Image (cartoon, rainbow, N blue to C red; front, side, top):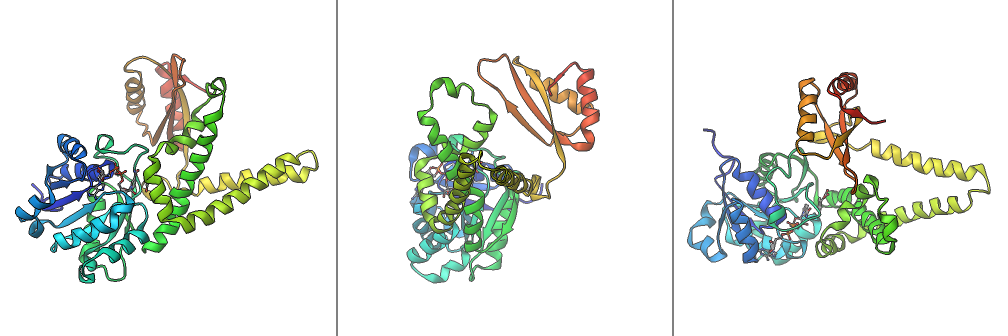
Length: 372
Ligand SMILES: NC(=O)C1=CN([C@@H]2O[C@H](COP(=O)(O)OP(=O)(O)OC[C@H]3O[C@@H](n4cnc5c(N)ncnc54)[C@H](O)[C@@H]3O)[C@@H](O)[C@H]2O)C=CC1
Ligand SMILES: O=C(O)C(=O)Cc1ccc(O)cc1
């Protein structure tokens, strides 16, 4: 049997993220010790098979301090500085990383709380770019990070072996590491994570006053745009306030763009030029979305959607996948639009452009209702 990638890893904070990391490591037989301030969360994480529970006192008594090679801190942003600094003291032989969404503030908090700056060279920030709008260990998944980016953010004094350990953690969890400075990371996530969160929240907020009868019309587009608005308000208050300046700058820019669109719509009778402005805004959005990388951070590929009507009966999705697989067509992505009160769902199979003719033929052969 091949050697596990780590001997022993301590995860502090066994919520959604910490427990997902622990479950991902357990797949490779890594020994995982779990700590959490909330005994209920700790119990759930242990019952899911994420690792062995320890209290800080037990960790010391068991000599864990000497034998852990890595400590992963998965606590909320406001607790990161104290918990990382404490871990550097308690585990003098280990590299220490965290999963926090904002990196400059985590580093500053660690510096402020560290009893000695000497151990700081074992700290390397980390941020898996995967998660969910849910929190707590019950929502954890071993495959949460598969194919996702994982930001690794060394500071000027980070040791190369600590950086290597964090990159190994990312790869072991199925992600691909992307190295950035803490400041560069915070600028990047302001755009790719924090601005979308606020935009989703603002749109979803408008739904609170909508008439019930109007909400029945909601389709997949609205659900796509508002899913992340369901995230924990306390967690997001901490994330956004820790990255306030870059996020506020982008929000002002987005607000200017929204004002321009609103203004154009109000003046639409005035001139064709107004419509041209509107078209330009819509085209800019379409151009932006095409810039998003595809699977594993690769250049976006030419995938096409093939919508199939799926009867709402047990086993239909499995039958559809089996028919597609038998035709030798690889499904790159799947979206399911299931409107309430309908006896069927719409499944969008995203496949390589070249595979579309073979897929259509196979679907017709097996009697599937291809939509549109
Ligand atoms: N939720 C998400 O989708 C993502 C979250 N993150 C980051 O991951 C970190 C954890 O977030 P989640 O797992 O979503 O939160 P969570 O609320 O599911 O888990 C946090 C856990 O930390 C524990 N905890 C709090 N203070 C502690 C302390 N002082 N010592 C030990 N345990 C403590 C809590 O009891 C809880 O079990 C945050 O820093 C967040 O910014 C990063 C990427 C995605
Ligand atoms: O649910 C999703 O799709 C997310 O994007 C979750 C998420 C939340 C916070 C992060 O710092 C990173 C990812």
